[in-house]
Image 1 (cartoon, rainbow, N blue to C red):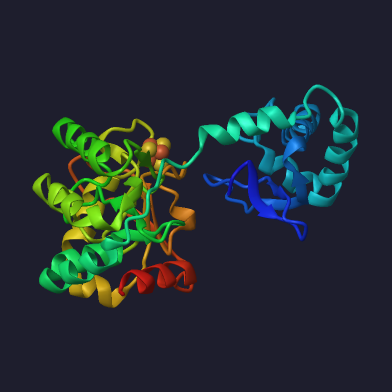
Image 2: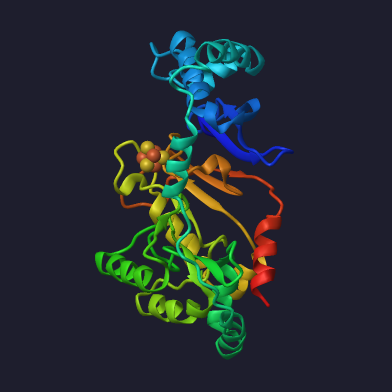
Length: 328
Ligand code: SF4
């Protein structure tokens, strides 16, 4: 669903490259991107994406703001012909200064180096006894902690979706507290997810209980990552001049209705995404259930008209595996 999508992969020789997709997008004309290259070596990333932009600049509809997107060009040209044109431009650019030198690739790689993860095997035994002693903690671990490449660590989702709260909101004092917790337990690293949550990517299992207590004290330990109350909602009519409908109160009503943790667990993974108008900032096209506000009513009303779109998607094998490994 992106203008250009890059899927990192390894080939049979263990080399890193990218499958390249073009022409995706949401909004008024939602389209799925088409694959135009199966394995692009990383040194060619800049020249190939530049080739895509050159083809778009030559033939795209920059004269019409409703059609000025790569997805429109791909739709009108066809993915096969577009790939041929991109390849022709790429042949001109491939061995120019746009080719990434190995030193640059290494320098970029170093920006994403792992922190010094020392072995903390005691975490596994502690985790088991903490979970037995506190079912709420056990539920939080199962739902909000994903396995890390180092077995003694986990990736923590700090849910910004308290039951009945405004999706994605955090106060200044909560943000200060999260920064302190990240400094103490997560190598000072915080990431923000497109799902309007916060990720602490490296937390020792041995520190999970202390981190959880810290999150409980600031109201950010809701165990609902990936569940029905983990809703994405755009600002909607409360803040956005383009909106037809109020996304936030609708999200709050759904969250309150389904707030019971047992009921959420019974429903399982379910992604609800809400956009207040066709621009799709809430990504309603790609939710299991997407809600699109289509008719403006009073600002203080949640009774606008909505279009509901449902997609049947199998429970992610990855998330099931993640949950089971942390149940140990
Ligand atoms: S989807 Fe529409 S209402 Fe929501 S933030 Fe985007 S432009 Fe505004």
